[in-house]
Image 1 (cartoon, rainbow, N blue to C red):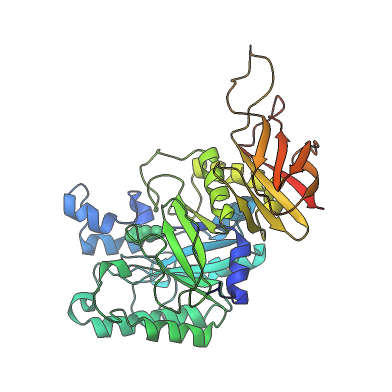
Image 2 (image 1 turned 30 degrees about the vertical axis):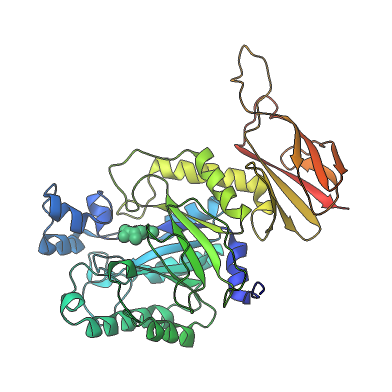
Length: 415
Ligand code: GLC
């Protein structure tokens, strides 16, 4: 048995490392998450009837898709996965007559996917399309599933043929209907995508209950929705698949009345945990209905961008190389190895600095290569190291007063 060789477009995807997930749609006007159409109805907390919900189109008027893309760019994201259609069935793209429940028929009167794709190309960001497979209200979804699936394929075909080369498609909703055989006619759907976008990643979210599960043979990556990332055992797999973990800046995907935000530290650590095993991190934000990004998430993304500005060289394109029992790990790129170090202390006077965290010798046991010239990437400080019986020992130093990067990375050359 062996590990299968990855196709080039799957390798290219892995190199992107960090992406921005964007949940944007009519629900952004209500500001109670992207499931409000369903859940508001059920618990009666908001008067969301199908008719009322759909009439939100009359008020949906985003000014531009550019700000979302600019925020992603500044954050160091290399790709954006945008909800082109979510479970409420509303499309941000021109459905070209499949129905009139789309952005060109809303108040804005424009194809927002086209604007999104154009803005991405301007900023050198790879556009990915999230597309729901489940629809809350489509009459055929319950009554004529074959016809529904045909409509789904026609919809996806528009995304594959009208917007030039895209990074990939990210499906979500198959978890809602399971059974024997090819229930969702995935063969047909993916076959169609391969025809028009041969190098697009095809991803289908396995949902919260089946993190990391390998699905249909055409799928190119497994997903870890809101999960702790785990290394994939690719030994003996039919095909090499990538891995991606998604999570949100707070507890919702669509914009919501939710101040339960994660800290930059938590998110930077999540990104690093993903890169430890070569997975991508897809971090979500729910923009305001006008297309602007709320202030606090903007600040979070800016903080990550600041970190990536300093350490990004170790994040993009690098391959997993070493990990041990602790959280610290190493990745490799060309002739360099990068050591990711968590929980370092801050130095200074005990009158002012909150002490915590560690410094000193750290053992990278059974390290596969000898290294030289180990230096922190942020200030170039050289770190003492020794190599004995295959174990590498590096003298890690804490943050100088005035600095804290949550995770600090040292770069070294392979001897
Ligand atoms: C879930 C939800 C959905 C969200 C997605 C993001 O499957 O149904 O609202 O878009 O997760 O991963």
